[in-house]
Length: 185
Image (tube, one colour):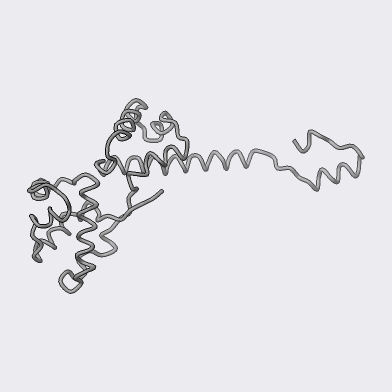
């Protein structure tokens, strides 16, 4: 799964405020990020978390500011302030690649299969980058859990299924002179 780095949600507005305190003008920043005029100020005042596309753009731009001007923004964003999250563009690809049925995904997510199916159909026709971070995290957790369950199933099958023992079959053939066809099947 392709993952991307963003600023942690609980530290997001705190990090942003540090940059504003050092002279970043919000209206100019909105233009750089590609947000509408007044959007960031409105979302920030309500302490809401923007959709993935805007959130990622803000995170990347702040990280670029720090990288390009380390003296002006010293250690504003540290490795502890960052986290990895599943890139939403790859959610559908991950589901198709794993050949997950909607019912199985719904069981893993502990939701009704109708709700999960509707959510997937909605995002199939819309820009995945507008997905809320909460939805991305739910799908990411569900995919990890599905992978874990699948690995457990494969391990159980592998453990229960008897392996073909070439040496035992060879020894039995040498002793009896009869090839037991059911032994190797």
